[in-house]
Image (cartoon, rainbow, N blue to C red; front, side, top):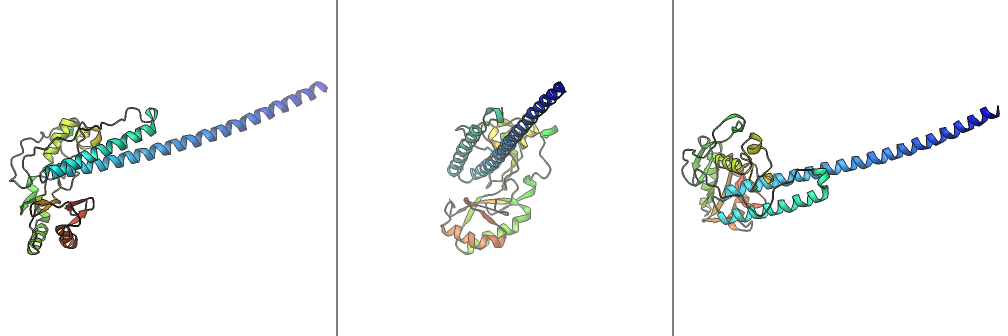
Length: 278
């Protein structure tokens, strides 16, 4: 009986130790899961922020490419500023995440800016035969809905989508009556952007139409994303001078009247007016 009693007590002590170990293990598992959940949430937040940075850079580079046909100096300044800002932001994000989280997902930044676009026609010239567009072949052919020269027409100095030609004419006529001579650039053929993406990003469909601009060398906007490439945006000069100030008389007139013709300003760019404000 003494032996049985001793064995029972030993078993109870062992069971107690096992229970304590189980509780400790459960607490450690819960702490580890909480830490992992927190880490995963942080990574997702960093990835969302990185995607936002890429989207902003892509938009700015696309606008700079279109603006270059109207004002080279303003376009270069915008390009340099956005590339530098995106590079700094991406570097900070990568530093926070660490190599063990992001692996080889680094991006190409640096001081190089997008090469000057040598399109087949400027926004103020006559459309010419497309000699630089890549041949449509396999997976790298343009996606459906890509706007071409057959979809646009010239109104004043602006090439625009035919669907908004009357709106543009109304805007220009009203501005002229108010004493403002508006000129500038509109449609930008995406073929030249496709050629740049092939040279700077790669030749696959992903390289041309999906790879983030920051992962190209130099950074290059995705073709077709710009409202200019849809023929639904205007970069406006007044009296031959790019509208760069929101306090200028021309901007003030546009702010008061452009919406009547379906055009809205992108707040960060006084010269840029489009059908959706982007």
